[in-house]
Length: 174
Image 1 (spheres, rainbow, N blue to C red):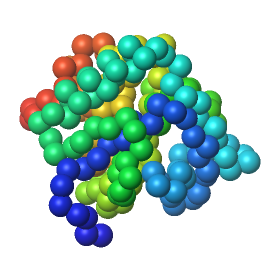
Image 2: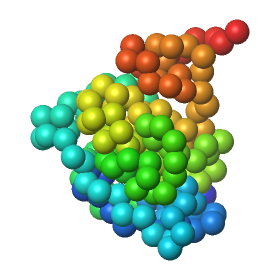
Image 3: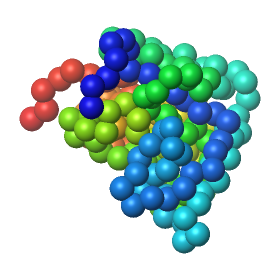
């Protein structure tokens, strides 16, 4: 679809929400995601469990990571659509997935879903650590813009939390 001029908007939802499962849906405005695996078709993502200081640190880091790009980072629900939303809080089992993951997102190659994807950063799984949570938010939201993993340990797109991520690194992979 055609999008209005202006920056992409990434909304960091620290307030929690009820997300419904829908087979082909990844929508921030409709609060649905095919990533939800709960049998009853609903998942309650709890609010962020960290402190206000941790929250502000996370927002500042995500803004720093995305500073070189045309993406506005907000932590209050935008009044206009479209926007990508990252649910920040809880753990993988809140959306009924198993395993030790920091987050999940649809890989939206060529950003075909526009700016309306819904991604998850499980802050409780990393003890609300600002650096690890911000890296998870940045990586999962970048998947929704079409970026894939890299093999560079210091790149946000490295598939595991290394603790030494510096940002999105524009390097050629061999």
